[in-house]
Amino acid sequence: MIRRKPYTGDTVLTASKKQDAALGYFWYGYSIYLIFFFLASSESNFLSAASCQGFQIIGLGLMMLGSVSLMKFRFDNQLLKILFILNLLYSVTIVLRGSQYDFNSLKQMFLDITFGIWPYFASVVMLLPRNIKSYKKIFTALIILGVCFLVGVVLFYDTLHDYDRLNLVSQGLVEYLTSILALPIGFILLNYNYHTSKKGFLGKIGMKNIFALLVLAVAMFFSIFRARRGLIFINGTTLACAAMIFVISTKKKALVISAAVIMSLAAAVVVAGMKTPAMFNFLIDRGEEDTRTGVEEYMYADMSSTDWIIGKGIKGKYYCPIVDNVNDAEGAGFRDNIETGYLQIILKGGIISLALVLGMLIPAVYKGFFKSNNVLSKASAMWVFLWILYLYPTGGMVFNMSFVLVWVAAAICYSDKIRNLSDEQIKFSLQN
Image 1 (cartoon, rainbow, N blue to C red):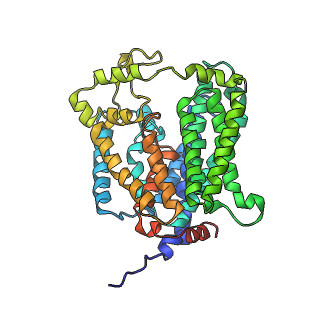
Image 2 (cartoon, rainbow, N blue to C red):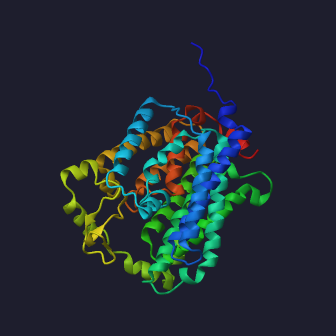
Image 3 (cartoon, rainbow, N blue to C red):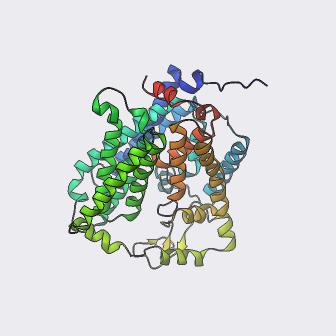
């Protein structure tokens, strides 16, 4: 029996000029959409909310323009196809249950990345071209978001660095800046080897890698400063996983591991002898604080058996009077979100929604880790795995770049053609 070599032709490594232009419309439009959502939601008074929403609509229009010629209903796995269709159909029922159609509700549906409709349909990015040139556009979009993050830090530094630990505006700015603009750049570090060259010391490290490290370092600083434990965990695990990918792929594993152990021991000795810096005091004070258990118990008490199975719909809420800042048309004490991600998915769509999402993502992790020949596939599997892990400390499905990348990464993991590429082929295509 003759075994055919996997096809690695133009459709896997390259894109046509028309396709390349459409990919630019989609990803740069999406970047505009996210950047101006941040400005509209951050309470920074930098631009009016109406102006920002106008730019969001422009970004959304560019995304639609780009996606028309890009998305093809093709799948690399029959089970994935079935689950994808079921998830889309079920997501329609989530959106229809409780939707309102007045002007403000429509704005929220299309322009809010958390409570709008797009998180339920983010999986359609799996229909985008599965070729290396399309991922090159994503890396560029991540750099753009990282630049906007650093610009935002400069513009809003006084608010971000406010020593009033109860300043909710500062807290919100850190949350939005980091989660929307900074954290997605970790995907570049997971794919560090594609951004290096043999020219000079900086080339061997890679300018994109250096920039990504800078962005995450700044994000980590402000996350610690404002004691945002979830952001610290996400930032730290992303860096740890990037290091793990490096160790897995390097040819000098023993040397790298030995150096890491020595540096860790040296750092531990230094830290042990240091006085705790003032910026860590607030984080230490919050270290044992439990802000979830009470809220979760109120949600459990307000969920019927049917609610657990199918959820309460896109406008689903639960009674939780222990949170001070809730007050809506239904009266004080009702919340439409919970900080535990998998519970947020269940609140809106029930266990069915969670099962459909995980049913698509868990096999992707397995294929990417254990059935692949390149770092891109393994890094994609790692990104999906991390999102599943983050379902506890984060808010579940949010239409930000991190979540959209989960579906892009899953599509990579399901693609036999991409998983069979060598790192040399991928690197050459990305750098040319």
